[in-house]
Image 1: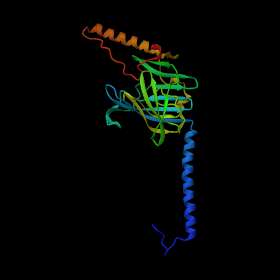
Image 2: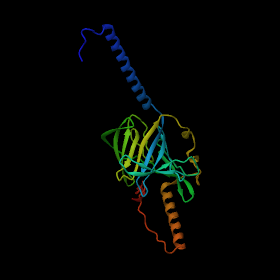
Image 3: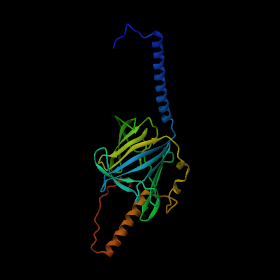
Image 4: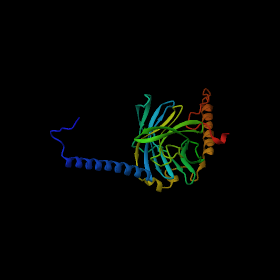
Length: 278
């Protein structure tokens, strides 16, 4: 479009338009910079993940990560009172979605990672009893690549990890300098926005982030749930005790019903190998 020489724009209007455009540009830049600075300086966040488990019965539910600079509290929310609904994932696969119930008579386990204390604590069941368990804190051997993509409006970088028998792919956002992710994942220079294993058995993906504080960090973790023990047992000891419990239960069932057979089930859990098994 050319100039209308018959009705040229007055010079003072041109100056006004330039000033207005500069003001708009400055406002947008300041807003973006302010938001980025706020995120980079944030001390705490609450991150909602959607979990996909592609196992015997494909399942999806939500989990919340409460996180600050040094501590993460991961709170998974499947329960027996939930309503099952079919859900289609991004790749077209169908999952059974577990909608969280308003009832509270079910286990909703917490897991805590404290980087400053180099400590991992969580709750786990053996039969009807709940135990406080301490895992071995590890510096995870992430391999950070140059591959990037955008997730929830944040530029994310790809990293890979082999952890206890599974190979994982993570996408993390350096603009959110909180060095945690779902479950036991930590140690990347930014919040994990998405992580999945290469066998497509487990996946977590961020659906919501709120930069706000939580009272959970002020509470004694060991008192968040009513466990049988006050002093945590080691994860290795827990696995031994749980295996013994399962053996005794199966032996009692076969004793009462000779036709039953103990069929070995392959370990398809998140962790399939442990460093103490070497």
